[in-house]
Image (tube, rainbow, N blue to C red; front, side, top):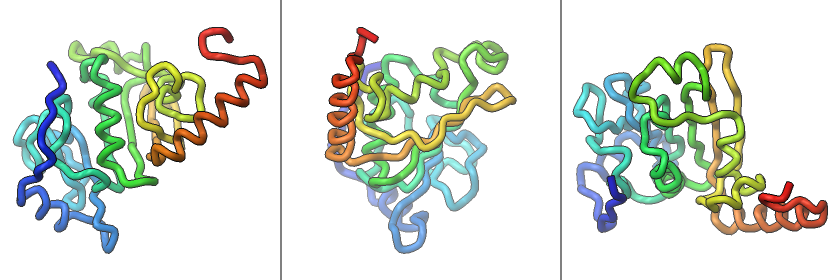
Length: 198
């Protein structure tokens, strides 16, 4: 599938939904991506490719941009979807989630740990993560240099006994991400550590 670019025109029903579901005076929503019929609760906005019960927005996760305005989310939950997505689209999809999050908003990710029973049991799993994978999105880490995606700060990165990996990443502004990246690059240079030559 190719990445499709659309005009930034949002249907009135989407804008009305955001207004109805926004948290208090913040005007921000909590988005449950690929929720299926298991959306967290009615205070969340559910998005899925299938028009299941509880789905507010029928949309393919791999088709970006999403029909939502920038900076409209306080939290995005991606529970057990990343392992089903085409690996070559992951950077663009997480960049899209970054676009939707407000500064300081959080991306909550849960997926089977690489090599776990849960990962291998499902024939539709394409790729999973280990505890180092989130570092590719952290402006603080040397792995960020590989793809230079939109910047996040890792708040939590835990492997669970049930075989799942849970990651929480907080959106940084591009300016803050650049400052952190440049500062860490200088520290690594002073210590004689460069990407690919460790």
